[in-house]
Every structure is written in C-alpha cells, then in structure tokens.
Length: 305
Ligand code: ADP
Image (cartoon, rainbow, N blue to C red; front, side, top):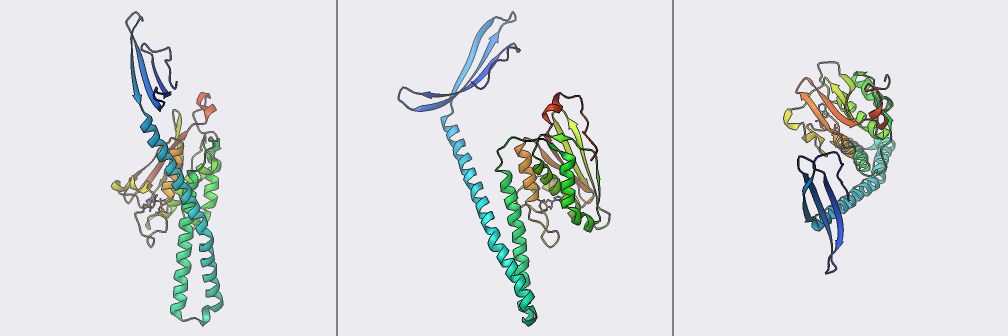
C-alpha cells in the first residue's frame, strides 16, 4: 500500500501498487485506486475501485532508467579518460613552442598555437562535461548548506574574472537551505560567472544576489545589467551546449546553465530567467527551506553575507 485514507476527508481514498502472481504463473504489477463515498450522515454508501495492469509501464520505465544510467557512465568515463591525452597535447605543444619556437617557420609557430588553443578549449569542454555528469551521480540525501558561505566560495573562485570585468557585486543576507554546499556553490559560480561575462560595453557591470522566502522554499535571484536575452531563447539556454553567441564573441561551452538546471531538478526546484534585451537579466532558482526552519519562527535570512 502506498497511500491510505487520512481519516479527515469526507470521502477517504487509497492507492496501492501490488505485485501479483497469476494462476498461469506469470507475474504482474497492478495499480489499484479506491474511494469510499459517504452520505451526508457519514454512513458508507459504496466503494469505487479501479485496478490497472501497469506491468508494461513499469518495465519500460525501468529500461529507460537503466539506459540513462549506462549513458551517464559512458559520458563520465569518456570525458574522464580524455583529460590525460589532452593534457599531453597541450604540454608538448607548449614545450615545442618554447624550446624550438625561434627556429620554426612562422607558419609552424601559428599551427602550434592553434594546437595549444584547441587543446585548451577541449580541456574546458571536458571539465564542464565531467561536472555535468557528476551532478547526475550523487545519491546521498541533501545536507544543510549556508548560502552565504557557498556564495563567498563562488566569489573567491571568480575573483580574477570579476576584477577584470571591473564588476560591482552586491549581496543580500542569504539563508541556510537543504542542499549540498558544492551544488549551491556551482549554481552561484555559473550564474555570477555569466553575469560578469555577458556584460554591456557601455556600462559598469553590476550584479546583485538576493533571496526571498516563499512558504517551503527559497527563491534566489542573481541579477545583472548586461546584454540581456531575447524572449524566444529564455528556455533554450538551459539545454546542454546551447549558446547564443560564438566563442569569438564570448568564451564558453554552453554547459553552465545545463549544470544549474540539473542541480535544481535534483532538488525538485525551478530555475528560470527574466530578462530585457539590452538591459539585463535576473536568473531565479528555488531550493527547499532547511527542514527545522519549516517549523521555526524565522522566515528571514539567517545572517549577513
Ligand atoms: P556558456 O556561458 O558557457 O556559453 P551557459 O550554459 O552558461 O554557457 O549559458 C548559455 C547561454 O545563455 C550563453 O551562451 C549566453 O548566450 C546565455 N546567457 C547566460 N547567462 C546570461 C546572462 N547573464 N546574460 C545574457 N546571456 C546569458
């Protein structure tokens, strides 16, 4: 039995999944649902029940789950094993350029530079793909994370990019949430990283991070005054490898927002963007409130960030 009457409602209902062996010996899985109808005095009139054979549906679901697991394992192994040869290509092309560079024809020096920058781009791609597949691999229950600490860790990893962009980052106090700290840091790092990358050349980049409590979840917001996003791409950009610009305009792999989407899916939250082209964007994501805060009196962020 996976559901039962709560004793509170006028018409109690139930739902059950059963594994049965038929007379023929074959095994089936059934989904049963029932609802009890009462009259105004509360006396039971009848019980309505439906039983469906869901054996095939469960089998297909299980097959899809296994295929996804295999694909994930393949992507993880492939990207992991690619790191080593890529590193060698990069190191040896750098060595060649350094030790023999002055004797080489200018064309050969240019080719070596293509080799090195290609390997560097691929290294970034492989690193991001690994980060993407790793999000799908954790099984442990969520821990509690202080969003202020995760944000500080993300800002420190982004410190040189922030300084280079001369970006001004302002923060509101943030809460503690029921997620893994590394996931929260990844979310901030990707969203703030984008906010200081997709900036408009005619104004100082400004980024603001805030959080607002909404019943059982926190709504986080990362806002910028950058180039903005056209309305028709507001959902596309969360897909794997989806980019709105070429690498010459803005560097990137198109994996960052897909990682964010994956993390948020894992916690049953939502991620979306509100944006005005040419004016800026606000990326929102929701995460569950810390369990003991659900019954606690405070609905405001825990401490200053
Ligand atoms: P990457 O930045 O590596 O291209 P992402 O998955 O992080 O990949 O982002 C996907 C695309 O969404 C980006 O290529 C960019 O076009 C767009 N985008 C993301 N963040 C912003 C932002 N803050 N402002 C404008 N465009 C953005």
